[in-house]
Amino acid sequence: MLTGGALAGPFEEGLAAFERGDYATALRLWRPLAEQGNAQAQNNLGVMYAEGQGVPQDDAEAVKWYRLAAEQGYAAAQYSLGSMYLGGLGVPQDYAEAVKWYRLAAEQGYAQAQYSLGSMYLGGLGVPQDYAEAVKWYRPAAEQGYAKAQLHLGIMYAKGKGVPQDYAEAVKWWRLAAEQGYAQAQNNLGVMYDEGRGIPQDDAEAVKWFRLAAEQGYAKAQLHLGLLYDKGTGVPQDYVQAHMWFNLAASLGAKTAVLLRDAAASKMTPAQIAEAQKLAREWKPK
Image (cartoon, rainbow, N blue to C red):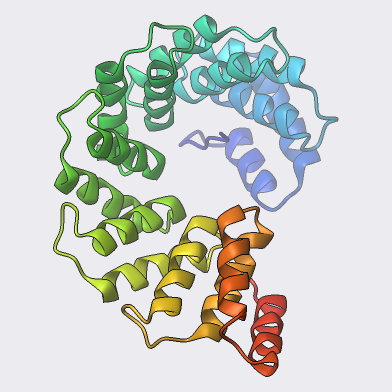
């Protein structure tokens, strides 16, 4: 992640150049600072090499600059270096090294690293699998407003992993992520309203949250929304809308949606099917 700062002069000039897409100027201004040991500039050079901005994309060079900044304790670089080890980009894949760097950044309060460290514990990558430790690291990232951590903390509560199962807590965290526009959390919140888990059952709210996720192109939500239109639950029954949403979900690989689309078609006239197909063809994610 590119970072800015309060440093006057060449660093800020480089940041302004970067933000307007003038990567060559940013590189020219930041490289001398990085070579003099400026951690922010080193981190930003790492980003430029990782993304191929102003330089040919080069993971090994990205790692070199991230490491220099990370060894100075620069949290953003520690996180990025951890991610390079996780993905085996520019270095041999090494989950234990990823954990090491994620932990250093996480202990400084860096939300993305806290989330990533939680995920390493969840998956047992580089550390023994430990759901309680996963929750421990997801929580501070979620409390900082990091949507991915809010989503996963909600999942831990819904499944009772590392914490006692608590649907109301799952709803709380999914709502926070959903309100930030996170499609999977919007879908999950829709499910909770649809089934009345952790919250009073409310068809209209289920439709609202499924629609927000469906409109982003989230296949599970498109499937759910199609079902509600098919049944006339929370919305007027509308086979054209149901067919459209099933068709869109099917195009994203949702196998059940193919069967549901064809079942809806059996209840529709040829004109209605043509209308639904036209709507699906013209649909664009929001």
